[in-house]
Length: 134
Image (cartoon, rainbow, N blue to C red; front, side):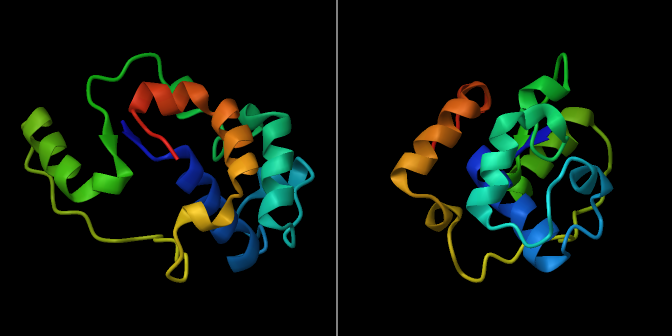
């Protein structure tokens, strides 16, 4: 399993599905009442009503019963090598695909301290399970 920092993950989901594509590729979010023009804050406010409503926003720790290997997207190059060694398979190198452009900004730039605290509470299980912080 590969995981991603929940704070960064929310920014990436919003950047791809909202400003970049207007929810064109996410019928489930449209069905749930998300709208293409939502601001990041409005998106996260709606997500926090029930993070499990969409796999893009659900707790990552809730999406598996057991993982023999956990890698981090933030260290994909190094962790992919560890995964190849772990499996013993001759897997190819990874190509960069679907990278979200934050336009030179950090995911932290999208949060106020108060907003980060609220999101941190909602995703506390993942933050603890995978050793992430803001």
